[in-house]
Image 1 (tube, rainbow, N blue to C red):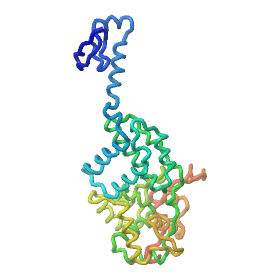
Image 2: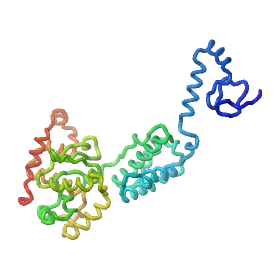
Image 3: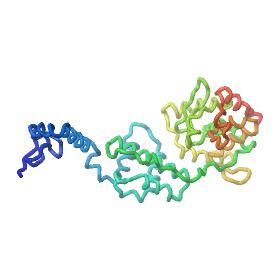
Image 4: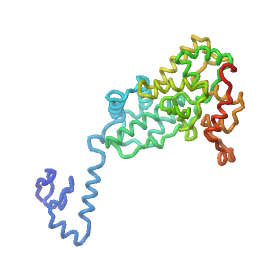
Amino acid sequence: MALFPCPECGKSISDKAILCPLCGYPVHPAEISATDKLFPNLAQLCYTILSNHHSAPAAQYMNITFAELYEQYFESKYTNSKRKLSTSAGYSAHAAFKNCQKLHEMRFADLRKNDLQEIIDTCPLKHSSLELIVSLFRGMYAYAIQNDIVEKDYSQFVRINIPDDDENGVPFSSRALKILWKNRDKEIVKIILLMIYTGFRISAYRTIQYNETEQYFKGGVKTAVSKNRIVPLHPAVQAFAKDFAAKYLSGNEVFAVNKFRKNFYKTLNSLGLATSNSGTKHTPHDCRHTFSWLCDKYGVDDLSKRMLMGHSLGKDIEKSVYGHRTFDELKTEINKIQSPDLV
């Protein structure tokens, strides 16, 4: 057997070969023709297999580790991106990466759903931190697929198997609400009141949609029920919504959750509202609990309240199947909440 260079790719191949095993080039067309008579379409099948093989993730990416891919992903998204992303978002990505240390030296192409799920299941941190890890997985897989590094996204199968810990909280008291309304000229207070009168979680405000004509917010996070829900804006906070949209939804500035949290606590301290009547520290999620309390106080019907807050109807089959509210009906319900001077 002798070797000679393939006319197509230049690699050394056997003079007995019908097709180049590296690129699929037909080096002996006459023999291919003879073979086709015995095995129709065999040559085409071989060529297709070779073509698919060479369209798979490039060989130079096969050994890239989780840590190495993270560096590429981070640089692409946070360093070189033309889109303005907050510093806190980068810090969150780094924190999530550090919590995946077991994966750092593993080849990214070798990872499977169980490897990712184990990180989530064994991490001792809170639900919010696990959400950052899952978000990192999904971002990295999206980057890897776009750059032909892997072909399948295993992150889509990863689940957080612990209860969401942000459902605990204490509403602001009537006294605290009055103080907030007296200080509504402060930008942070405007956002706090906006959160109190809409019931959206703080993280939803990064991607919330504003309809000025119909006066509502659309968005939500966490579950299928809570995502993309429409909440009519109470008349008392419509001006705050317009200001928020002008600053954060027009592309002028990114709503940074961590930055808001810092200013949230600083502002409450300055107003003497850092703690609730029961002595617990107020958190941004207490705004959502305050919305729930206001709905109960002013008689918003249960189905409307659940829909406005994005709560599951659970085992209530009748409401799950037949329960619905129009936009106007939801607006009527939310407008039951009395104006601030009567709180």
